[in-house]
Length: 241
Image 1 (cartoon, helix red, strand yellow):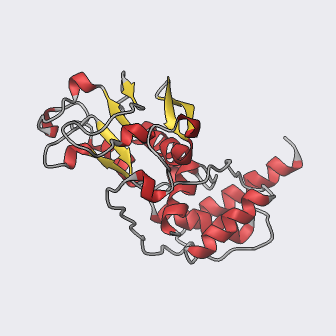
Image 2 (spheres, helix red, strand yellow):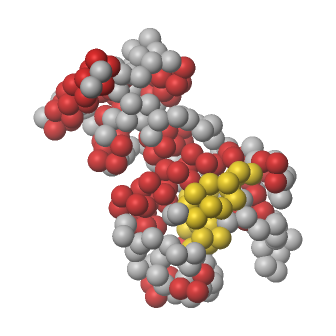
């Protein structure tokens, strides 16, 4: 193990100990809710613009998705895998169409919506009797990072989840000890949500403690453990809006 990894491991252990002993102050959670609105008003451009799409892996399946929402998608999948034993067999995403019986474009036309196992989560069916509805921790994972679940609509659509937050920057994972522009970006977001930072582009010391505090107050400390991954990046960007 090289010197940098040893340092990172020691820093992680120190932060974990601080959290366990209650030395890291628990800040009040900031809840951010986005109304269901057209993606065009949130930085996603025109529907069916395939130049803005990419291929991503969702529960082991390659699917089309919008480049501006890859980060929250990765975050939701990470939480769903950590919190739930439900692994969808079928995943549907992009479809250049309008909402049935409406002149409004579906989120599927922006590749910002997912339908899981339609046969088991039929449109209009009581969510309590669906496969998704029987896994509330799966729903909670998607809603936690800003997705809207169709199972809560007046005419329920339990298979359906759609991204209703803003267009986001995709970010690389930042482990303890990392240096560079990603860390400076991290420090800026931490400062915006009211947490102390080093402001020197090194993910150590005060930055580590602040990330641990942020993860603790958002209930994700066990998911990323002071590594700044997609869940932490997504929630930081949402809280700093």
